[in-house]
Image: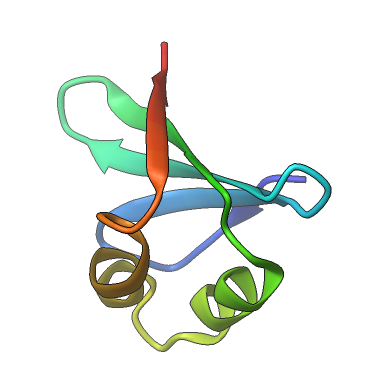
Length: 73
């Protein structure tokens, strides 16, 4: 289930605990949103992201460069 979040950079987040995949929809002025899937994200990291005061800051410091990623077209 996609979850809308309050963030200046991220519009929605979805997590598949079975596959350990984190889907993130980023706000983009050109195309409305861009969708990326991060692989191998542990449930605890997802939980911390959802509890973070700033979803964008947490994402950029803990997730962005730490996991395999693919852009969904």
